[in-house]
Image 1: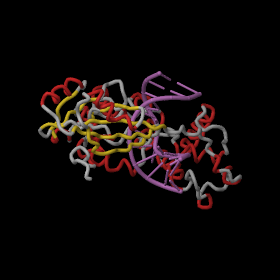
Image 2: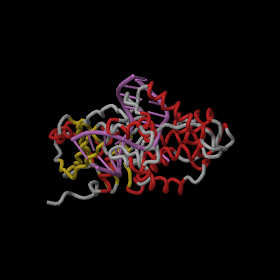
Image 3: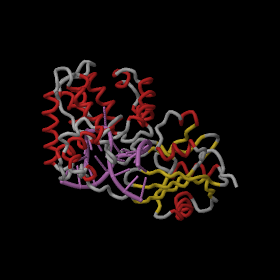
Image 4: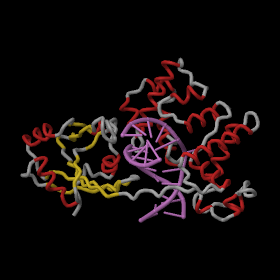
Length: 323
DNA sequence: AAAACGGGGGT
DNA sequence: ACCCCAGTTTT
């Protein structure tokens, strides 16, 4: 959960998760949809799938006991060099290095590395240094050494305004001495996000909604959502609904959700038909691939695409817009 | 070596 | 608006 995600964000997800899956076996035996449901809103859903796959692998090939060698840990799905080192050092007190975003910052500033931080040469150097440092830690303190480096980066050696005068490594820090902490680490500029627009259809009948499940080869695979289409501009929503579902209906805008992730700024307009006959309802079901009628109770068990989950929380699925 | 993956926090 | 985050996998 903590991969690319801050502790504060993770905390409530982690609590709920541990209540439901208190053991490796519980996770291994869970329904995949249940696993995704508990991860809903946290993002990077392959982490959830990998975590369950890892639990199943540990159960089947390690007799349910978590492996304690670096190579075995590294073999687990979703576990790369960083996570394997973190588990090895913190859980098992072994002298394996870790290099995360915080440690990149601490070490590259201390050493005055101005070359691009993600370049293979710099990464190689940082992992070398981290290896030396963790190896030199007192017996039994390997995990503490790694956590101390991360904590220093998270608190004192912060990205924007590092508190160099409070830093225990101030003496000997190249970037502090040369006052160029603002240029180190040298990170690639982040790509600007692009706008995207979507139109979603709230098709309801007798307290059930028509939902579709996302295909396995797309983002958010397996998650559920209202029927939705991407459009070229925001104003194209009604026309698209007519094109997809029949042009004789009147569509009312029920609400809008803005959903921003790293690369996109998405706007989803939710529309509902003003009035709908039984024939149309049947036709909708046939028109939408992978569609299914879902009750409110069932809804609470299905993993929902986050934008649509936001809409549900904002009552957009239920309530006509007030005028 | 890049890109894709999702979302939220801090300033 | 922009940068950053307790990274890993795929392209």
